[in-house]
Length: 190
Image (tube, rainbow, N blue to C red):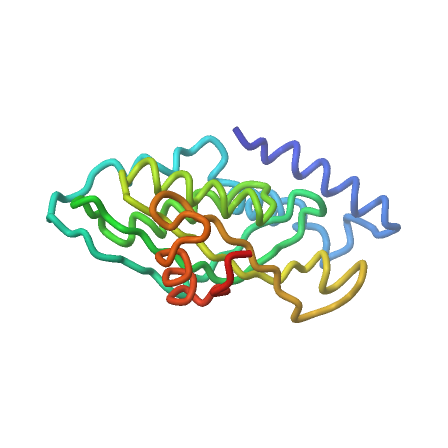
């Protein structure tokens, strides 16, 4: 459970610690605004991303379903600043499908918690593979990390790509190369 009061106190302390006056007109309401923002940004903590995926439809569909260029935003757990990009998702149903909005909602739940992109990609692939009962799942995520763009090595525009493959899209298979090509990933088996 998020404690807005504790966040407000912490932000007030940060403002003071950087040498600013938390009572200055532009900063006076900042602790409250940050607490409200954190409540939204971290609303996925404690939520089950698989919950919505459990209700679906037996359609006898066994061909590839893809969702492309799904924008996402998350907070890097190492620096508590955003990383953002787009997700590509493909799954091979075993006859059962779900509304595509439910897949996007699962992504939203996972992005609304402190994250690293590698774990986010793995969690999404595992959630979809198990909850959908799919024959195969592939997730490709490409994101820019502000912790790398605006501080540290300061390389804006650099994107990190992560991949997670489950089921029939196993390593070295033709299906793996095909799904990664469709989702905009590499065609190599690396």
